[in-house]
Structures are given as structure tokens and as C-alpha cells.
Amino acid sequence: MIRFTLAVICCALATSALAAPKPCEELKAEIEAKIQASGVTSYTLEIVTNDEVHDQNMVVGSCENGTRKIIYQKNDR
Image (tube, rainbow, N blue to C red; front, side, top):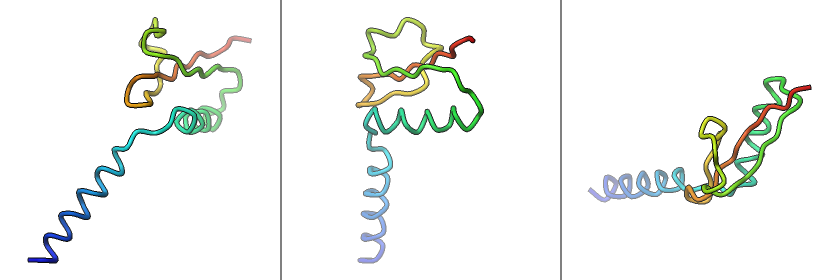
């Protein structure tokens, strides 16, 4: 019974750790790495507040408990 209880507690702790919000700069760096890996060379990533988002299609990430968004814009050459 003690092993079962310990297993449940460990699973609960692991789940909450996975759900922890990421800092905006860390998330932006991860998104930037994925964009560069796909071969896009001219783009802009910007961290903005929710009020500053005018087009939801530009949002590629959410951070700081959903209070800020990361927006992506491909720059044309």
C-alpha cells in the first residue's frame, strides 16, 4: 500500500512539473530554433502582452501563465 501511495504522489509531482509555465525568453528560444531548423531565414519573433495581439493567426506561443504571447511574422525579401 505504501508503494502504491508513493507512486501516486510521484506521478502527481511529475505532472505538475510538466505543466509548469515556461519563461517567455526560454519559449522564444525554442520556437526560434524550430523555425531556423525548417530553413526560414528572414522572420521576426516578438513577445507581446495579450492586449497587443491583433491577429491570432500570428500567435505561435503563450507564456507567463497566458498573460503574454509570442507572435511570428515572416519578413519578405
